[in-house]
Structure formats: structure tokens, C-alpha cells
Length: 234
Image 1 (spheres, rainbow, N blue to C red):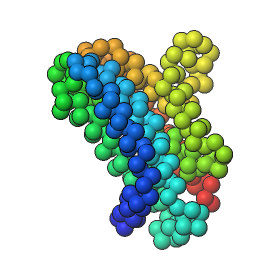
Image 2: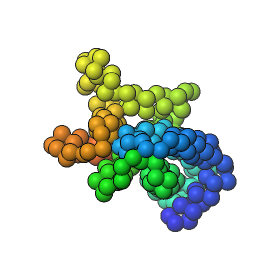
Image 3: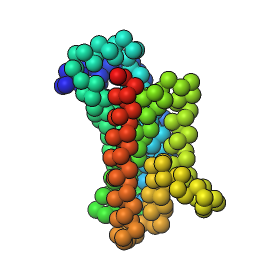
Image 4: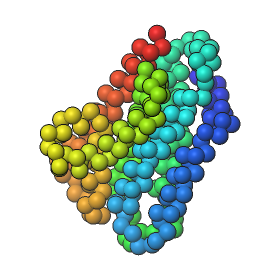
């Protein structure tokens, strides 16, 4: 498994597929923090939302490194299709974690915020970015490692899912009938609303329940994607 991990990491680096998403995200963060004295949580909300799309982009690039014959050879060498899937996910997490660290610590290093970052801000921000990253990995895996990957517009479909997840709260406010169908999408929109309520965080039951539901959603989503992947490759 270690050899596969190193092989995948080198393959992704040599493929140069990492350059567009990484460069776009770095430029986005640099430009966004051009001005100083910005609020903490609402600023982090922007970089966490952007990370959803970048994570999907990175994930789809990593899952497209091999053609079908090369993938079958890797299945044989690993003696498990699940090892292949989990190895890919590990690479995704590693690459996106580097972007996440940059997004969180860059504004702190240049002192871009108008208030000092407290531990509660850091913890909430770390959770929000990791949640966005994992949501992006799920969407990217769904449209690159399952039967949905065979669709002509899978990349655009993945980005559309992310857009709906981000703007879901606004859609529900306009059409309440969409409340239940939108439970199929990651609750990113609901989470980002707490980032936009100011820099004072109140740990109430609503926030705790939302965080719990978010984790349950991620677990269920990873299980579903795993089953869809195994069904496609059987």
C-alpha cells in the first residue's frame, strides 16, 4: 500500500494535473486578502467554499491518472479494489490538506484580520475547511470513480452539485418545497451561514446538531460512493 501511495503521488505530480487547481486556489487566496482589516469567519467562509470546488477538481484529476487497462493491473497488484479507492482518497486528502493549511495560516501570517484569531475561531475554521474539502472529495469521486464518470458532462455535473450545495440555503428561502430534496446535497450552505454571523461564535444546540448531521452525511456519502465504485468495477 505504501508503494501504491508513493506511485500515485509521483504520478499526479508528473502529470501536471495539479497545476490548474492549485494555482487557481493560491491566486484566489492572494487576491482575496489584498485588503487588511477583514472579518475572520466570513473571510474563512469564502476560502472554505472555494475549497469545495478545488477539492472536486483535484479529486477528478487524481482518479483520471490511469486508463482502464492500467487500473485493472493496479487492482491485481493491490489484490483489492478497496485499497485502490482508499489509496486514491489518501492522495486527495494529502494534496488538499496542503491547500487548507495555506488558506488558514496565510491571512494570519500577513495579519489580514481586524481582530486576533482565538482558539474557537481556529477550531471552527479548521472544521469548516476540512468539511468542505471532504465534501469536494465525495463529489469528485462520485463523478470520476463510479458509473457517473462515464457521462459526457461529468465534470460540469460535479461542479453543479457543488453550486447547489453552496447556495442551498438561499434556494430554500425562496422555495421551501426544496428543503427535503436538498438534503441529498452536502449541507455546506447551512454551515457557511454560521461563518457569516460575525466573529462571536455561540455554541448552541442548533450548531452542534448541524455539525453532527454533517458528519453523518459524510460517513453515509463515503459508504455510498464506495458501493457505487465496487458495483462499477465488478
